Image (tube, rainbow, N blue to C red; front, side, top):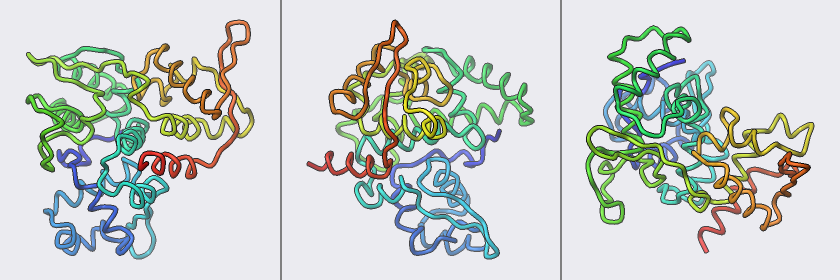
Length: 294
């Protein structure tokens, strides 16, 4: 359980592209021993380099490892797909993939995981959010003070929403809008009030949903080829939680997958579940990007 590893630098538009460009040629770029070279190569300050390292592995763009030479990164399957098909992160599916990884990482992105899996309030103020998270954080051994949690909230908020008004269709500057703003997962209602609205099924590409379901339930699917819909809706770190889906919107999404022949929806005397085979998740991602490009 950790907070403030990003040094209060929220994820900027353009940073994933810099990461994807840099890692293949220099896997050790984020190693502390290479700090000055990273500053020169990435074109950001030393503290921002540390923040970029944090966002690289928490969003799942890279896998971070360590050997005798130091810390090194390799592009993940998600990272290599983004590199090949969407290097500027313009696809909504890319944003969903990176959000998914953040919202499932209770160790490195604790506030993100808690907010989308445990918080449970549709409308809230900063004070209400911080009060609830601080209680959770302390109960689970967190030692940072409330002021640090308030800073963490500001970074969390700034990855999804601005309390300034803007038009997503007109503003394209790198740091003008929050990275995940196009997803609409958090909205600012004014007067200090934020909202986490229920998503519509049409907001989520079906192949991204399928990929997420398969990755979230890999171990379960080794033994069984079915998952209860209630698990997908209410299970921690499941698509219903971190994509803010209602029962009806989840069911509509699953019906789209069934209509595409990718899953089977079953209603067995009121027990509703899906049947699906183990599929190549990398192939699913590649299919999504190829279809999106048409």
